[in-house]
Length: 129
Image (cartoon, rainbow, N blue to C red; front, side):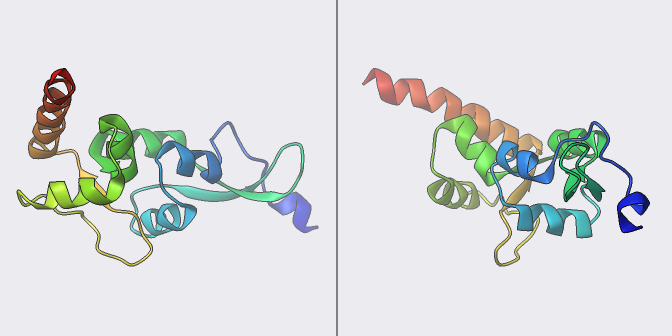
């Protein structure tokens, strides 16, 4: 009976795939869903019939436009997340959450974007020396 009550997963990506894409963990995704920043749904896998977590594509697109994880920033800049978060805190850029076991999430503000651009410009100069 339970098998028929849960709708099969639509074309939405799984939480596991999104955690890899955002360079974070599934616990962070669940926290973001509890804060209303992502739409997380439990559905059946269409082939395996097991219950899995899926994220709606539209909520993921909205998240990526507005926010960025420290893991995503680290990948873009070729840095490690720990030193990068300390580097961001120096001029006063703080994560929007300060929760244990949840990845640091930053708003894509003009300051963060400017720091990304500045850091991207500094890397070739350092390599040229």
